[in-house]
Amino acid sequence: MAADLNTLKQDLTRRMDGALDTLKREFVGLRTGRAHPGLLEPVKVHAYGTDMPLNQVGNVAVPEARMLSVQVWDRALVGAVEKAIRDSGLGLNPMADGQTVRVPIPQLTTERRNELAKTANKYAEGARVAVRAVRRDGMEQVKVLEKKHEIGEDVAKDWHGEVQKLTDAYVKRVDDAVVEKEKEIRQV
Image 1 (cartoon, rainbow, N blue to C red):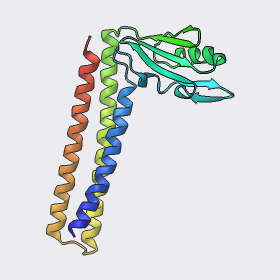
Image 2: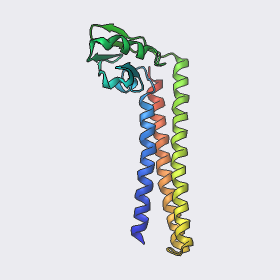
Image 3: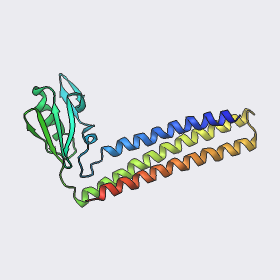
């Protein structure tokens, strides 16, 4: 029976880790006033008749704290890369320089920092909801095992407690991540 609990916990842990990983990926896209290659991850460039991720047409680098550069592999795509970054809704103004597109990261205003903090909290709430959905599934699995008489009432109660402890730990990790991101956003 203990192996079944471990299997259940491993499955729930894997799924909760997925929710946390998604949150961290979403946080990368939140601009904090410092250059980070992940900032340009959502940018799609119209190249060769299709929309391609920016990292498939050039290398993104951080030459300075407030500057990104994109070394475009095909000179013919420099204009498309520049346009894609400008039109991405990230509030960036790229400048072409030969085969390199330089992207200065502007200073954030207080209003924009507050918007980013709200967005971070929205992403965190989504992660909490995902973690709780995994908990609900875990609780249902335990109930099913109990109804099938594969585990007893006392064991089911213990397993419910374990699932809840796991959930609480992951919700705390989400809370810690959003507090850290807010600190990062509010730094000048």
